Length: 192
Image (cartoon, rainbow, N blue to C red; front, side, top):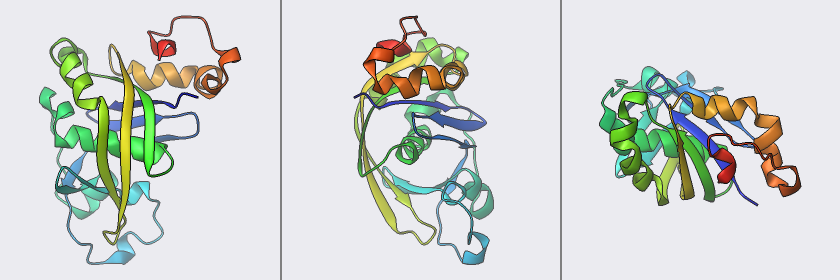
């Protein structure tokens, strides 16, 4: 049984989809710090409290970066392979997946103006095993080991989640049952 996930780390938002879940959050990061007033995060969802420890850096992501930190958005084409882009990608996959060990086939993309120059570098950065800690509001870590067995990149990037979203019930959910696999070419997605 293949676990297929689609994640688009855009300049404005991270959009992610699996057979079981769908999520979206602002594509911004900020340095982590201890939260002084917990009432600011009390009652908010985990997605609204998103913080990670990745590559030796503790970071707030999404809404938490806006509320608790000096949020920054890197518009560089190099961002996707750097700590910021990888933290956003891995956090999305960690929230889509279940358990401490997550193994999946990933569908993703790059902006049009970065596709040719960054395609292979991004794919190689993603393939293999990664380690990230999701941090609770109090800083308590929840470790995740994420392995990408295959990475398929779709050109251009906005089509990643949209292509799969349009076929969500038809393809992603039914990809768990081979007898219902579509035969059409979905820009290589079905080949995962």
